[in-house]
Length: 104
Image 1 (cartoon, helix red, strand yellow):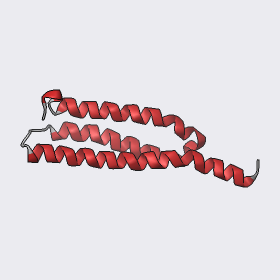
Image 2 (cartoon, one colour):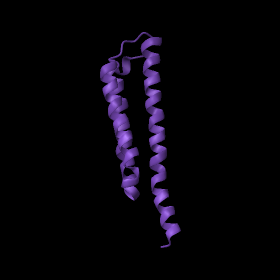
Image 3 (cartoon, helix red, strand yellow):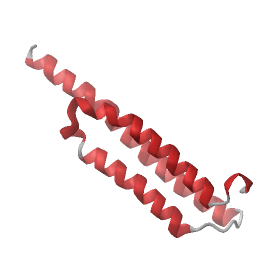
Image 4 (tube, one colour):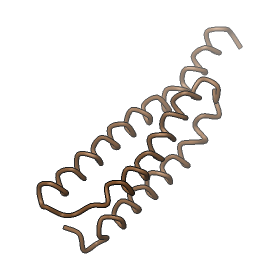
């Protein structure tokens, strides 16, 4: 294997993680904006402290994977499924904390 092929392979394994990290930061920002709009716009009470704790878990996971991206190397792609499961759990918790399916 040539050096160029090795570098290309290394970059190709890190690239999906970089995009997923960016998308997840956008998703977190969207979750916060949506929570603010529902809470203040529709005057729906929300347990902000609990929601902030759940979002902090998501932020910490994103920061960790972003920081460890180079160290994970080719194995970084294996964390994608776990990140998506975490996202589903976080969204479910936020929905449950803010009133469940009865919440507007």
